[in-house]
Length: 352
Figure 1 (cartoon, one colour):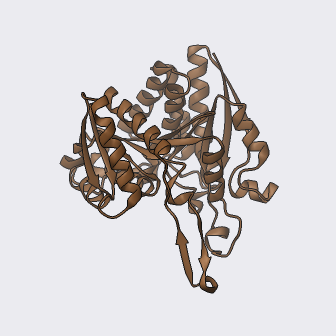
Figure 2: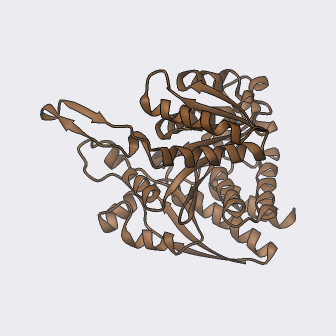
Figure 3: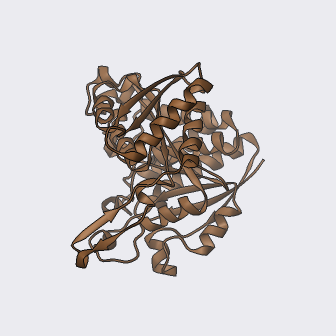
């Protein structure tokens, strides 16, 4: 199979970790007889520097013409420290989500036996935790009307959702619950927010269509507590954009490191695969960043975009082996560099 992949490394550690994912993809393709064709595109601060746009038209065209997008991270201290900046790297993320129709972000959270003691939570709480977060990605407050008034002294951000947007993401989440342990948790703030009441009403209407799925409802503040208190309770969590952004970062505590968590953004035109961590500019160029999340994102790419489940499984096995054998970066207590971990996992793919 020929795999056409847009490679968008972005900023900070993005180029370093994406390069390790490319190594894994090429090793898998070599082993299984596929051809991976990577085409580079600019994104984030790197794109602003070159084009004055965090998601330029050239990059959008590349994504539309590709079977999948492998993405790194965006963000740069130059913009973080300038609240008056009109153009920011993160605007590229909103643009790519909207223009590619990336309406669903999937973030699996699981633990590795040898790393349960790396979690800030007690080992007995996280050992065996395995759940999927489904976050709506193109609606809500991130895309609602926003602005300033009263001479700039009053600011507002508007949260808006349509029935179509809510129905689409809930059906996806119900479907994933059916393929897992048949338990769906709908997270909202229906005691306060009108948009949350719409989410809950539509989920209630949908329940009879999925009689095999157990559904429960949880306010977001309670969900934040239960993720820490009893993460093994969850199977599939579905929620709106802002809540999902916060909860999925919190969920990284379960695995012990953001450097372990991959994600997929499912879209109308193509799908995008990325680690959940940010650009981590303090580590950029030092060859110390954990590449595992980026490599696992490549595994998700094989599974979700190409339906190549065996290829994805091989990558996951190689990653597990690297962790079991202590071939890890400093964030997990190891002494290997980013590239050394990537090389080891690529080599293991051939040997498994």
